[in-house]
Amino acid sequence: MKKLLVLGLTLFSLNLSSEQWQIMGTRPMGMGGAYVALAKGPIAQYWNPAGLALISTQTFNGLEINAGVGIETTGGLLSNVSEVTDVSEQLDAVKQTQTSGQLDAQQMSAFVKTLGILSKINEKEDSGALLEVAGGLNLKFSKVALSVNNFTSVGLNPFIDAQNINVINTGSAGANIPSNTAPISDPTLQQAQQNLTDAITNIGGLSNIEKILCGGVSCLPGGITTESDLATALINSLSGADPNEVLKMSEEAKKYASDAKSVIDSITSGGSFDNNTSNLNVKAASFTEFAAGYAKRADKWLAGLSVGGNIKLIRGQIGDKTFEFLNESETGDVFKNLDDNIKTSVKPALDVGFMWNVNDKYPKLPLKPRVGLTIRNINSPSFDGPTGKYKLDRQARLGFALSPFNWWHFALDIDITKNKTAVDGFYSRQLALGTEINILNKKSFNLPLRLGMMKNVAESDSKTVYTAGLGLTFAYVHIDAAVGISSGKQYIDGDKYPEKAQGVVSLGILF
Image (cartoon, rainbow, N blue to C red; front, side, top):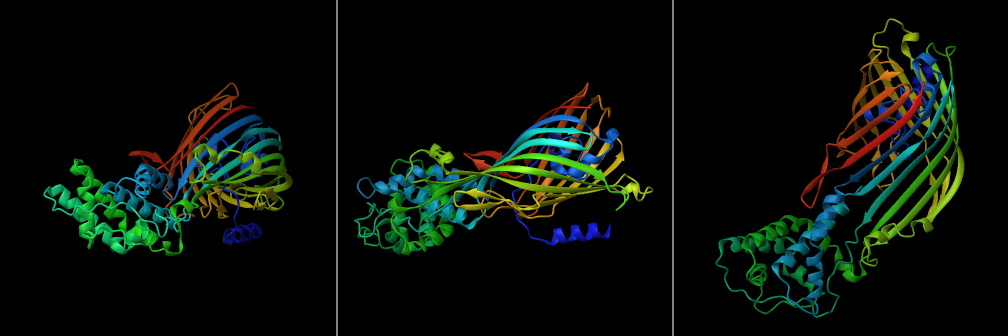
């Protein structure tokens, strides 16, 4: 017992890194991802191979097929990208003022807003999106299990070039800036003029305006000597526009001006917007595991202890591609020819699991407590990748379970390891909690209901994901489904979407 405690505490103190622990199976998904101390049936091989040692009356033999998918956005990426897209036409219009047309308040507001958003994206090192797919075939007969499972993750990592953002090349004639500074009589437009004056002042005043829009040369009309003059001329250039719309744009410019200044101040060593290297890096990792598992009781060590392990061959496929926003015309090009940048290799790996039925040692304890510990990929195999070796570091997960009745269970899991993901700078350490109620509680006929929640404690701004699952067992055929939805939301075109969503379905023939 003391050896197990030392092992668990030692692992918990390590700041290890690996792939994020993916949710395999509908029962774990419905319970928020808490399953290490409850693992049984064919998918016990993944969650805790020690669960294969449970006696036949406590577990299932047979076949189980699982398929699941999850998507998560990090660092407010979708909301920021959506806003940048909304004003992209105005940015193009600002560039066009080099040769034709005239700069107006709408274009100036959009430009300031975009620079502010770029600054916000740069501040979030973990900004990105993560797509994960897990599924496979699992077989169990007595204490032996065989499985073929795939775990795939794709990370989208944006890079924003905040240096090369001058819309006018150095030394050019610059933008065609309006000069009409006639007083504004409309009260709404007067407020818009004041907002735009504040925005221009907050981004560094007229000197920064000339630096960005005119390539550092003097290009302001003679009658414009103050920020207020320029704001007035820009408002006047929108003759006939809806004053309320102009006011709204000016408010956004004022809101983002302070953030925009940090970008503007950094461009003195940069160049033209035409040389901007902003890009989206796609990292993909797919691992197919061919595993054989076995478990046995270890009562000589500790009454109620089971120990199990998996021997695996892992086929790893690692891909990496960078999509340059300004040099590739179609967004679909992000994934074009990604296969050309994938490296494939095969490596062995080893998992080990421990499960302790505490009542076998202390029979008077209530609620049938159990403790589980799983360590995956102990040998940390390395796979070939387009940019070098990709190390699949070990994962460790600790679980606890209580059963007030044979038909009612509670479980809690915590990742011992701090796991890296396919999104640069975004880490995962899941705390999971769930419950299951078996309405009929018979092997041949049952209606299990599951609820749970999970929280990524490695990221301070991570929101709780709530999960639910439902199953049907009839004549040894098991059909189950489970979903998870984050409480955190992101806005795209005014509509709310969850930051994270997951879903799993399974079909089993278990007896």
